[in-house]
Length: 227
Image (cartoon, rainbow, N blue to C red; front, side, top):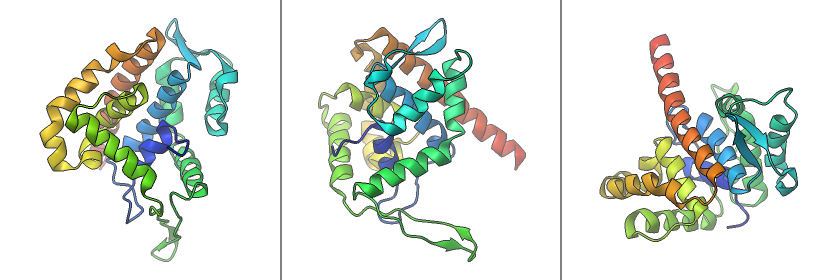
C-alpha cells in the first residue's frame, strides 16, 4: 500500500480525512506511535528482548530513514535499557514522530498541509486527505477482518491489536460497527500472539500492549488530578 509502515497507517486512521485534525483520545498518539515503532521493528526482526532489555539484532534490515533514527537511539545508548524505558522515551517524541510521518504522507501525495492560526498567533495546521485510496483500502481490509472474519496478515493483526490497546476502535470502525464486532475484535486481539512465529515478537507484543494500557490510564489519571 504505497509502501506504508505501521506508523503511517496508525496516523492515517487517527486523522479525520476532511477536517485534517486528529480524532484520537488523550495519549493514544503518544504511546500508539511508540508502540507502532516497536511492532514495526519486531516485524522486521530488528530488535529483541534479552534479560528484559531491548537489543538491536540486525541493523542492516533497516532501509527506512525514519526507523533507522529510532534504532540508532537504542543502538547508541550508553547501556541496554528496558522496553518500558524506550516506550516512554519514544512517547516523549510524539511531536517529532507526528511531523515526520505527516511530511512523509504529504510527500507521497496522500495528505496536504493547510496552514491555519488559532487566535491569529498559534499554529493550528490541518492535514486533510487528498488521495483517499490508501486509507480506504486499509479501512476496507480492517472491516473485512473484524466484520467478515477474513484472515489477517501478521502486520494487520498487530494493527488491530494496537488500535484496540489505544482505545481507537470506535474512531477506526465507527460506533455501530464496533458495537457489532466487539466480541470478534476481542477474540482477534486475544489470539494475536498465537499467530506470531517468533518468540521475540510475542514478547515485544505482550509487553507493549500491557505497558500502553497502564501508561495511558496513568497519564489520564494524572491529567485529571491536575485539572
